[in-house]
Amino acid sequence: MTARSLARLQSAGRLTLGAGLAVAPGTFAGAWVGGAADTRDGQALSIGLGARDVAIALGTLRALQRRRGAAAWLRAGLVADAADLVATLRARDDLSPLAVPAVAAIAGGSVLLGAYLLSALD
Image: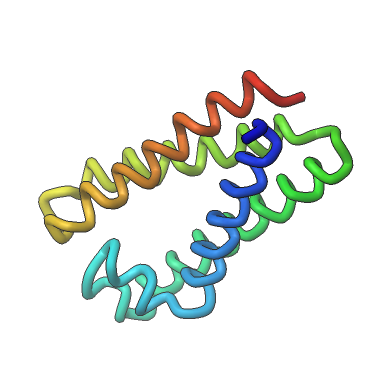
C-alpha cells in the first residue's frame, strides 16, 4: 500500500469519526468522555472537534487529489491527534477505563501514521 493510499484511508477514518462527533455527539463522544457528552457544553465541544476533523479530512483529501499541499493538512491532523491524546491522558482519572486505552491507541497510532506520511509525501 502506498503512502498516498494510507493518507486517504486515514482521512476517511478522520472524516467518519468527525462526522459522528458533529452529528451524534452524545453517542460518539459518550464513548470517550462518558456522561459529559450528554450535556450541552460537552456536546458543543464534540461538535467543534468533529467539525475540526471533517475539515482536516476534506482538506487532506483535496490536497492528495491535487497532488500538492498535503503536508500542511497532514501536519494539522498530527497536531490535532496529539492534542486529543494529551487531553485524554491528562483526564484519564475521570474517563472510562476503556476509553483511555482506546483513544490512546487511535490518536497515538494516528500521530505515528501522520509522522510517517509527512516524511513520505510532498
